Image (cartoon, one colour):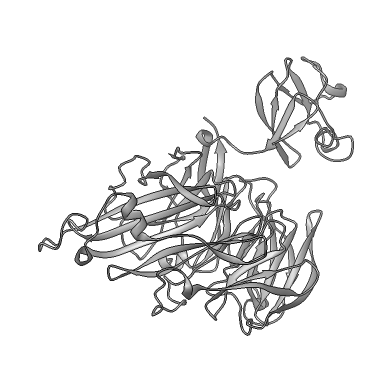
Length: 493
């Protein structure tokens, strides 16, 4: 939120005699959307004011526009709905667009279009969060599978699009007004790079200004690279994922439960990823958080593991009773919030006592919110997926937290309510500000997709930092190679 100095108490008069204007009372906030530009305008003064919206020149375009001049007694912020007024829906499917990325303001989605005779890098543009995306640009890519694109991500400031190619080269695209153009092509250099392109389905993370990128390569190392906008990328650090606490060296990183997408914070000095550990005979997921010191070295700052969660809950798991467990981790873009989704399953009584012959299945599910406090993260909230505090409920839920907003105030999850692993077709958005948690409307959202979207495949194709615009828009690529958009489609109490 930024201040504008606004010195006139205008009452019912119009600014400059404008015929169209928004009247805002003292201490009132109003969503003002005109000519494709939206702002939340709050009047902090003692008198009502009128905000001109007659045309773009008066509202947002040019040196004399209202938004481009300073005013006192006004506060402006990005156009977002309060949590209680949001209503989410699956708003759009962009066919045949994969390897997608989205800007933090939700204005641009980029991806490889696979529906034509030759693949191309497409840019789709929305006028505001929640508005439909339309194709605005198609940029040429080399011949070959997916145009040679392995991964892409926007810088958090929305000025650069970084693309990793399968020939150990990179491309940087730069925004110029509302269009994008190729800014630079270069090599990715480093003695251990070899064929070190990102693993899986194009998982790469990027910092706020786009000068640092991170991904896992086939050598089982997390590669952190300096990524100047003009010049070759060079290895800054390599972290062996097999050295993380409890790592199961017998599980390949190509396994669905192996190390998966890293998340790099905006400052480029905190990196989190999750990986496989062996816990009571079951392959489950842990997460490692590495931070960068002032001397440029990276070191383990914290890890999250299933045995920590059971200890926090005051429980005891017996090895012969635990049949399956799933743990998924997401970190906010500012690096201050980590959200863990857990589901532990086994025969009845697996938390209570050794095996007694009763084979009845039972599971426990919860979402856990950790906030950074000093160098560590502390548990501040734990709740069930229906929003109440009884986290022992939902015996057959299989779901994951898919994204956290940049400021850590909103999350969204994918859910399979029947426990059947064949399809994920439910989504849920939450407000998690402070220590409070609240499910947002409409609650459990049925989001139909291709029938063959299994939950493992769904999880293997995330869009990095895919919950954007202060939690108003979420983006995912499905197994069929489409980009699916969820978001706030209405804002009302």
